[in-house]
Length: 113
Length: 113
Image (cartoon, rainbow over all chains, first blue to last red; front, side, top):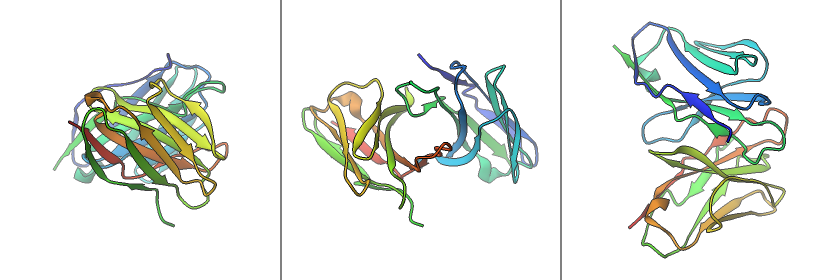
């Protein structure tokens, strides 16, 4: 059973701080990793994808991948109240698996003004 | 470019009935995946269709089925509805490339009474 684990939170940070969201996965052969943001009552929105070890930056967001440790993280710099949402980590299992994407249960982030 | 569209947005059905949900992918996207989201289980993969063929299938009973048409539009059907089928059903589309970034539609909220 391929699994993706996230701290459920809630994670609370003050406005302007760095929010750090973490995710571990069980399938060592996984190749593609994604972060989605989901506002309450809305559908998931893709915010970052990462495929190779290291950091990938996009605006205030930085995704970090360490395949040896089976760990992927998302940093949000200068957090804003509008970043308050649930963040879902998703992993595409290795070839031959039956699932398209395996999702963690999400971390709820609250940014306090 | 228009996003993924899903119809209907809300649906109320009674136990034992069947339901059909529809999804139109982003123009040019040929892969369509379906997910079920519940508070307890999170986002779970149902199945993926590409070129009118089911390419992957998650761990759901045979009451859940789908199909894809030549224009890449997809439908999913749930027969003999149970109370536990109440959920948000999400459709996601992607290009068939090595990136495989998936973009979600707004979802169909199904309530079974």
